[in-house]
Length: 412
Image 1 (spheres, rainbow, N blue to C red):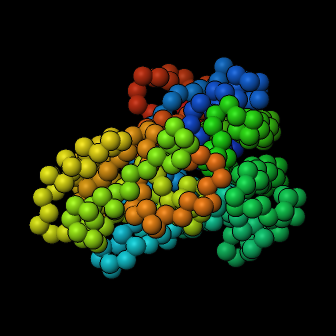
Image 2 (image 1 turned 180 degrees about the vertical axis):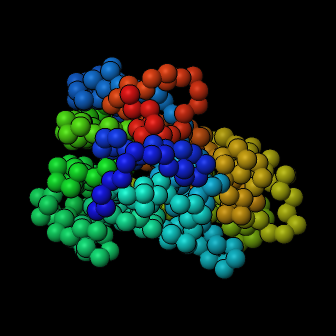
Image 3 (image 1 turned 180 degrees about the horizontal axis):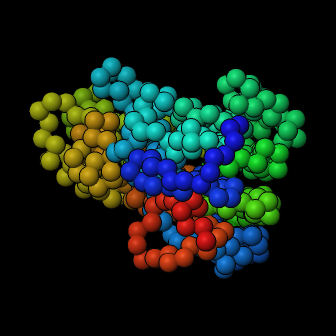
C-alpha cells in the first residue's frame, strides 16, 4: 500500500472530502432494514451498537431506488446517485446491442470512485466484499487491497493487492449462501486493520440472512451479535466507523406464506401480445436462490407506437402496484440514467414482488417465505457513526451515500 500524505482536501464527483486523520472504515450491511439493529439492541445482542447509538451519531437515511446491491454500493463509494455513476441495477438490457447482461463490468461505471481517488492521493486503501460480483466495480482503477470473501482462495498480489488471505484470516472459504460469507468480510477487515492498518477501508456484506430471517429472529440476532463484536474490535483499534446499508428488506408473501408476486411479463403478453414488451428485473444476479429474481422494481421496454400513458395506468391499477413512472419521470424522481432504463419503471408495494413470466422463475430454492427488496418500501436504511457529528441536522434528508462524508468530514 502507499504511504499516506499530509492532510488536505479531495474533490470527487462534486463533493469535497478531507483526507483521513485517523483510520476510517465504512461498512455496507447488505439488506439491513433498520429494525434489525433496533431488535438486536433491544434484546441485548449488540452492545457496541447500543453504545454508539447513545454516544455517536445516527439517523434513518434513504438509499437509492432501485434498492438493490450494485446501485447502492456504487453510490456509497462515489458519493453520488446512479444518474452520476451510471450503475442502475444488478442487471440491465443493453438496448444498443440487444442483449441482457449483468452490470458487473466496470465499463458501465461513469464516474470515479472515492476509493480510487483516495488511493491516488496517497492513502492506503482496502476493500473486502462478500460477493465477487462487486469486486471489479468497487476496485475500479484503485491501487490497494481489493478482494471478495467468495473467492478468497484465488487472490493474487498482482490482481488483488494481497496474497495468502486464507492464512491471514484463519477461516476457510465460506459458502456463498451462508452467514459465514459476511463474517469472513469482518474477520478479514479486522486482520487488515491489525496488520496493514489501512487509512481507508470499505467492507460490504451479503444479505443471505436478511432474505431468510426477519428482524428479532434468533438467526438475525446471532448475525448482528457477530457483526457487533467485529465492529467493537475495529473501534478499539482507533477506527472512525460509519455503518449503513444498501437497502432494507420486507416479506413478500400471502397469508399462506407463498410468494406474493405480480408476473408482469405474463400480464403484458396478455395485453399486448406475446413477446412484444420486455420486462427487465434489475435484482437479477448470479445468486438467485434466496430471492428467485423477485424484487419490487422492474423496468419495461415497449414496442414502438404503444400508448405509454394508457399502459402505465393499466399497470398501476393492478393490486399491489405502488407507482408506475415514465422514463423521464423515473430518471428525475430516482436520479437514474435515462438511457439505461425502459419506457416505464414499475414499483410494487411493500408486501408484493414483481416477476417476469411465472414459467421462468425457479422458486425451488426458496426454503423460507420470500423476503426481498428493490422498491421505495425498502429505501429506509441506518446511517450510524461511532463519533459525534457536531451540528448534525436530524431533519434533513440523509442518504446512505453520505457515509464517507460523515466519517471523513464530520467525525468529531
